[in-house]
Structures are given as C-alpha cells and as structure tokens.
Image 1 (cartoon, rainbow, N blue to C red):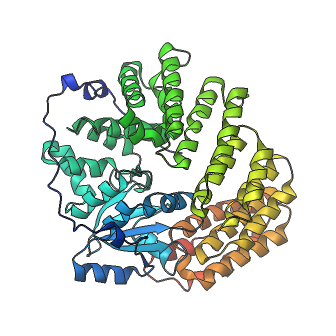
Image 2: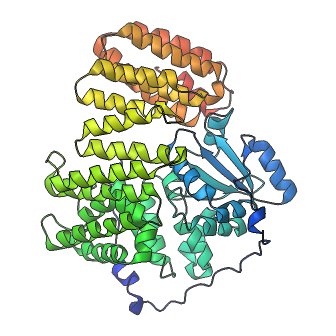
Image 3: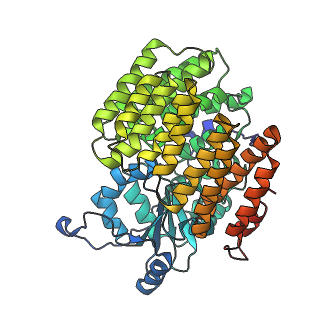
Length: 528
C-alpha cells in the first residue's frame, strides 16, 4: 500500500498566469559546438558497445566523453518503441557520437547485477554518467521523440548531477539555465526509484519545482508531473483534492489540454493518468468534471490524429477515454458501445500501421490489452495468436493468452500457456522471470498439483544456480514475490515439507553469490 500524499496546488493558477509572473527566464547555456557530420557519413545505427560496462567506462575516460548507458530487453515493448522511433533518427544517432554508448541487455552476463549497482528497476532506462561512474541524469523513456536529441545534447554538456540541479532549483532557481530546467523536466522520474525525492515524496518535490521554475513553458510540465504522481501515490487515486485546491488544478489541466505544445509534451501523463487527475481536480457530477472530461476526450482525439507521433502514442490516447467512462459509471458498468467500437477500430488501425518487428513488439500487446479492457476478449486472443509466428519474442504474449483463458474459466489452458511461455523464453534473467510467473500461475490455477509446483520451482532455482549473476534486481524482486506465493500456498495446502526441500535447494544458489552482496542476504532469507 502506498502512502497518501498531501500536496498543495494553491500556486498553480498563479504559475500559469503569465500576466501575474514577471520573472526573467534564464537564458539557455551556450551550446557546445558539435562537429558537423554530413548526412552521408552519419552511421545508420547507434554504435552500441554491447554488454561490457567496464570497457565502456575505460574508453570514456580515455576519450574524455560521458557514457550513455541503455538498459533494455529484446522482448520489452517500450524498448522496442525506442528502437522503432528514437534510436533510428539521424539526429539522435549523431548526438550519440558525443558519448560512449553502451547497451546492457537484461540477459547479458552480469546485467542484473549492473542494474542493481545503478539502481535500475525498469526496462528501458537510459542513464548519462561521467567516466568515473557518477550519474549525471536519467532520461525518461517517455520523452517526446522530437525532444530526445535535444535532451541528450544538454545532458552531454551537463557538469552538475541531477541531484545537484534539484538542490539548486529549490534554493536558487534563477541560477539555473533554461537547459538545466529542461533536463529536470525530462528527468526519468518514472525510473528513479525515489532517489531524488525520497520514498513517497515525488509529488511534493515536483510541485516545489513547479513553484520554483522561472521558465514559462516548463512550469506546467512540472505541475502535471506532480499531479499525476500524487494520483499514483495516493491510496485512493479517485479522491478529490480539498475544494480550495481544485480550481488551480482545473486551470492547469485545461491550459495543458488546450495548448498544442503542452499537450504534446504531456500527452503520456494525460493518456494514463488524465482521468485520475480529473477526479482529483473536480467533484463527481459537477460542471467542472464534465468540462474537464470533455476537454480530455477532445485532447486525446487530437493526439490520435497527430501523424507526427508514433503509432503507440496515438493508440494509447484512447486509454484516457476508457478511464473516464469508468470514473463516471464505475469499473463494473458496461462501457458505451461507441467507445467499444472506437477501441476496436483503433486496435485494428494500429495493427495495420505497425510494419517492422520493433513497432509490432511495441504496439500489439497494448492493442490486445485495450480490446480485453473493453470486453472483446475474442478479438484480443485472435490478435495475439496471429502475432505469435511473427514475433521476435512470442513468449511475451503467452501470459496474456493465459489470462484470457483464465477469464473464460479454462484454468488448464491458462496454466499451459504459462508453461509454453517459460519453455519458449530465452536468456538467463528472462527465463528465471518467466519461470517465476509460471510457478505463481500454477499456485493460483492448479494449487492441488503439488508435484508440478515443486518440480517447476526446482527447475527455476536451477536456472539461477547455473547463472547466479542473474539473481539480482528484477529477478530477485520476482523471487521475493514467489516466496510470498509459496508460503501462502503451503499454509493453505499443508505443504511445509515441499517448502523445506525448496529452501534447501536454494542454498545451492546462495553459495555462489558474493559474500558482500545484498542478493546474498535476500537469498538466505528466501522462504525462511
């Protein structure tokens, strides 16, 4: 359960009124000259150093360059979204020439351990570091595709860390350049693990930055991030702000939704958190709630119609309208037929528009999710089944097929899809994570089959024993969840002997972990 965040939006109305604000905007830092490279000489793809982080830092020190670290996975839809859009753009490729660019696939040797070292939890994460491994900034994977080269150029020139910029912004905001503020606005708050804000304090920090920011174009960005973060951090996201704070939040939302540039900069937050932000900013059944809902629907239709945006961003826009319908009528109420038809049409459009393997890996899972959300499970299943022979990572779709089978009451097929996904997965970290999903599925779907549950869990432990470097970060977190599931299953089904055998088997993994690692402590306490 996440802590409730109390956040004050009383200053947002003033922040958005340019007539009421006379602060001089800081000038952008002088751009560092980047040698012009003729288009014919720009590489067709990024020159990633694959996997060897130590060598990347050694090269960065020798060449006096920063490091651009990209942590991703072959199956990951947002990673494929970057590959299909940002990573193929000549301006971004040219900008990466100013870095030592290293790609760390989550299944490469030591990748999960590096992920723990750098405090990375989600795919994709992009981090800019000095050659001494000091982190300068993180770049959000949700940054607008047009902004990515600009943000990377600013990060390449940056000498202060994001934490130092945060402190200066709060103490002496006018001393930061416009580029400094731009870096903070595009910081990877979603993959930060509360490093800059502290646990549960992200909304408060972002609101303080909104209040302090002297750059007119960026103040709404910080305020939207604050409001969206508060909605996600609260125990009850649909709980409205106090009446005295609602008017300022309404002004913020309307101004962002009605301004073309602000809508583009904040469309991801509006797509996924727009309804909960409206719930916070207005009372149920009120005229402001109706106006905000109408404005959000219109804004998201404009996002969908913007053919300068990637297919996935345009498809995601309908999510806000689904959430608005649930907000108005409740999660269990039937959705309007016109909305269901809109989702079907857009899912089919996205399927037809996505041509490359990267695009399809990014788009198809979202299209199927949307179809399932509006109750068209048959079309969702048909889309996923059709994608299996086309996909570079078909196992990614199989847990979704399992969920669809479970919804129609076919537990046997649901478990079988999870087994197929585990069998088809590749890479040590991926196999361990998909294996955990299989075992947890068995516990839910076939709890009486103790033999299969024990056999599958033993096999997953053996995966880790063969590749102990994968027992870090994402894998370790999933093993912790598996332990909770196994303990609950044992308590309900009197399977303590099974847990003891599994605990003993896990000792073979613990004996291969470094004595000073956090992973060792977690391993020793597993199922304890």
